[in-house]
Length: 96
Image (cartoon, rainbow, N blue to C red; front, side, top):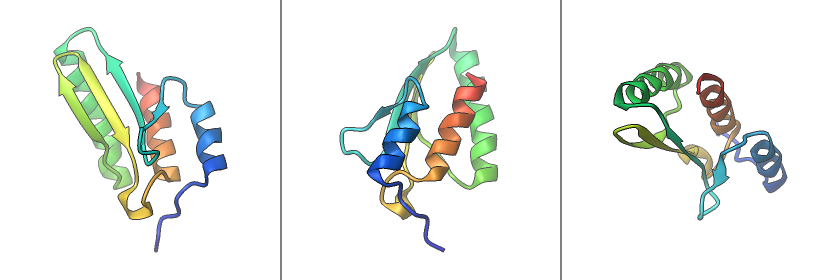
């Protein structure tokens, strides 16, 4: 079953409810950079997201250096943003 891509209106509405997240330059993803107290806190956060991602079968693109985590969410099967990305962003916001 194909995963539907969000329309521009759906994308804009979702972004309005996700403070701190921004549309990527290519318009195909949402991105955020988070800063934690130290590496241990950043890694612990990533572990929690990894558990959620595995259960949701939807994995983020991310980059970590010491206490910073940069996240990009997109649904490759949809060719851009989908509800799966919004749900993951909401989960991430809930644990930060």
